Amino acid sequence: MKNTLLFLTILLLMTSTAFAGKSFEYKINDQPYEGYYTAPTPGAPLIILLHDWNGLTDYEIKRADMLSDLGYAVFAADLFGKGIRPTEVKDKREHTGELYQNRKMLRTLLEGALTAAAFNGADTENVVVMGYCFGGAAALEYARAGFNAKGIATFHGGLGTPEGQSYEKTKAKLIIFHGSADTNITLEDFMHLGKELESAKVPHELISYGAAPHSFTVFDTEAYQKEADQLSWTRFIAFLKETLPDPEN
Image (cartoon, rainbow, N blue to C red; front, side):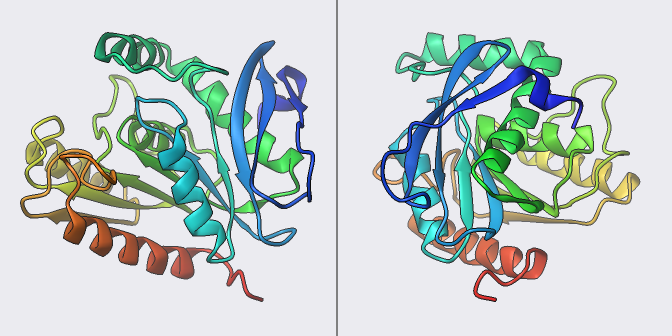
């Protein structure tokens, strides 16, 4: 990582056992961020979890805890900043738009997430990056940057590639979970990504679920589609087992 340690200071706020799930504050470029880290054992294989345009909320924390119960260390990163959890659509668009327009900063935040996890004792040599919606787009940015990862997974994420970028540096296998009824990210976007990955010879798996809309995995919302959520989660867990060391060993 490009001297990430020079610009990232971790301020751990954990007060109980070192591996209980806890929020903690860290800084990137002197700006405070608040992530969530959980690990069942020291040195467990790591998952970096990237939030949607709501910011880091209880949804991502629930998913992190679900993965920790399976034996994985999880760092749910904060890409917006401490206390920034937008509730209005215009604010969500503003915060995501700033990062879409400033890819350098987005990559700095992604590098910072990996470094923050390392400060917590995570195994950053065995890592999968996953993201939901906006976080899915960020996970693909991680892939295109060529950062260290064994796998990249997106759930109903943004699939477009910015002008001037490509997957030529990608080191990880990609798995993409998409809803065929998604009107925000279309099947044409889904197919175009597949062509890009094939052209770049990136190992990948693209899965689309019929009748599943955008945000089909988000519990307790109108968009939630139980079957697509359960099928994608089951395949994702299998992907982790195929990609990372067995967390039980």
